[in-house]
Image 1 (tube, helix red, strand yellow):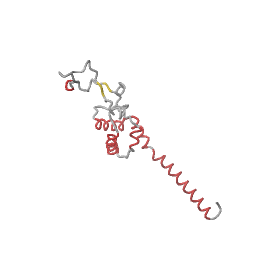
Image 2 (cartoon, helix red, strand yellow):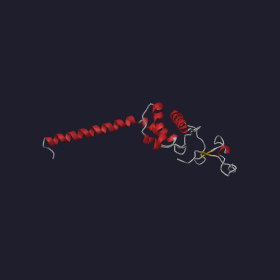
Image 3 (cartoon, one colour):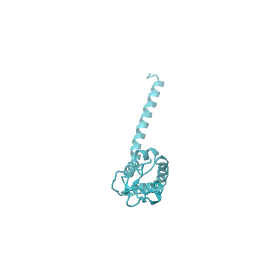
Image 4 (cartoon, one colour):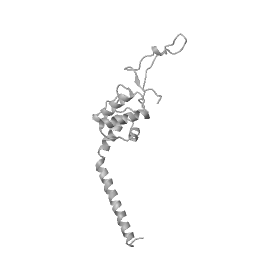
Length: 152
């Protein structure tokens, strides 16, 4: 969590008369700053879901722009901030997102892909529900046969 989200290369540290670092004369991290995530190039979010996620991450983390391959934790995120992200995503996307998903899919593109797949799951949920009903029926049938004395 203490890894900076950006760094600026300087020739030397400006010092005060007492030999301490003069923080007021240090350059501001901004347009000339390099990302701390290995110098990866910015890749714009693709699609509405990625744009929503990137926008929320930018607001919560105080980062100017968030790319599709940016990692929430590399940008300075932590477990307390991820709860804010979860709440805002729930409000914007109108759906509940388990907190575990935010830890499992820490990049904008990975989370967006997961949420897109998750929205397709009601069909597969129907298959699970059917299987559960069949298992319940088989169990009930077995209990009936035991009560009749046909099974032990």
